[in-house]
Length: 162
Picture 1 (cartoon, one colour):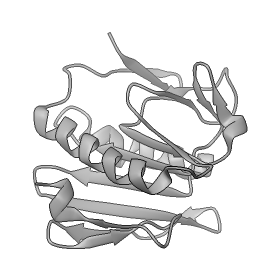
Picture 2 (tube, rainbow, N blue to C red; picture 1 turned 90 degrees about the vertical axis):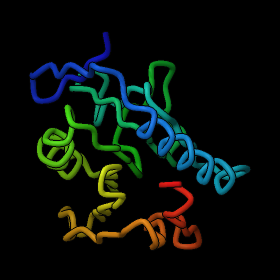
Picture 3 (cartoon, helix red, strand yellow; picture 1 turned 90 degrees about the horizontal axis):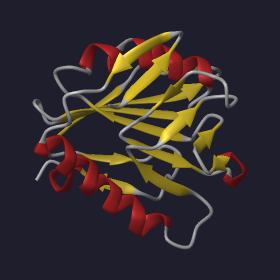
């Protein structure tokens, strides 16, 4: 059984994600894989543990994580705030992803946080500015997102929601 520990609360991560959820993660991963090939940053898909500041901290398992500081990558996962985290909503995780995790990621210094809504085929992008997440930019299926931490990477959302 997979779970996450956030602020002393254990969150069950069952049932497993839907095929649409996994398809979105796979396509997004492919976009980043090609872009990051030969660069310092690395991308990881769940299950991949993230301890946001030190190893005995609460941990999360984002759907997709980008880490640019290789010293944060350990055998067990990432220890320290990653640069980008993506969560794909499901009926059982939506409230946690848009509430508890949004607040946790803001406090932890995550530079960029994406919330992908497969049902409505939209993405909310939060950027950390002066230790505060900006109001989200919202993109629909026919739009494209320029990745904040990689300004020369543009993701065409019709390819992600295909």
